[in-house]
Image (cartoon, rainbow, N blue to C red; front, side, top):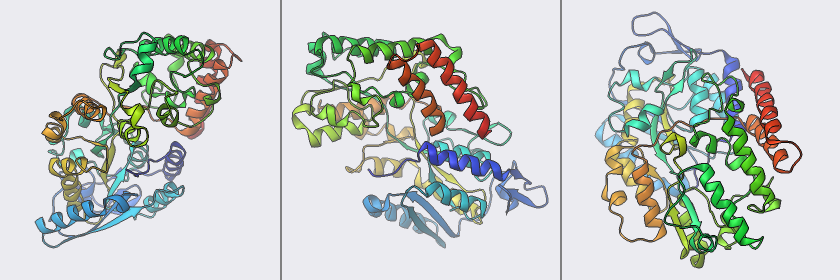
Length: 456
């Protein structure tokens, strides 16, 4: 699919601009004037009462770069909703998701003109929630949680201005995480493809075996740690940020230094291409050429290999990404949310819940043009995911991810691009032998804290 993800840089722009606005929620069904994010709104949109009102009238629905590939599907969903609720009208806006998306979102929010129903990712939802621009869905519909995988719903929370966790989003779809690998290259290194490692350091040990067997003819993985920070740390249950997100704490965990020491060792022993240390290229191309043993962790990567390199696909295996100390996988779902500034919130909430219900999630995730997974319990129990025929890599990937998502959470650390780059830069210096792992971790935390202080 071609849905764009919001970059950390754009997310940072949103967070800074909205924080500067000094917005929040006030009022309620038993108060006078009500505001959301500094915008005057219907009293029922804020406060502690359940949202009531007729489902009728016009609303806007915004996605990001989906109309070209999925216009027929979403137009069908809209027509079904309008048919079920006579008197409603849904205008679909499909934002191109270009480099100015963040600025437009900020401008819409501060002008009190956010679309009624919006497709957002976690960084965007975090910023909009903190500034008070999103409906508290858990309060406005106490039954909103019912369709979703409990672990996903529980972890799909954002912090409001007071620091409290609130449900301003509905989990929509996710990609899942798994190991993809060239079984022939693993066997040459004495690694059993049927027994994937259960820890990140165990995976690193396998990388080292590949390096020793390959002797520079091929590699285990790519070097740039930007692909692994903070994902590996999350999986290891290393806390990257403090609970309030205002300071970095990863240096407080001794395993962080051990992780960097492993990265240094692997890079210097030839487990990674030397020229990939600062490259943003993922493993896709080199894996398809048989030059890298481990591919992307995104399930859609398996389809990419099938389409672009059938010979390598025939040697591709899939396995469970190490659960490590966390004990389960994490997902990075896309969300559907409702603007607290909506002038027709009952209709907007009804459409958001209709769009994300089990029937519509299952239908879209079965589309052959996407490799995504639903977030509702009923959808994941569908035979399409649970009784996949065949033992080819793609079928195995679909079964594996569908099963793991039943216990997955959406808890993931969101770092701005500036903070992530500062941390990654220090790890890169250690990998090049320019400073010790201990010093790199210490300096990375100091630099991260400087940046976090500037944005708080």
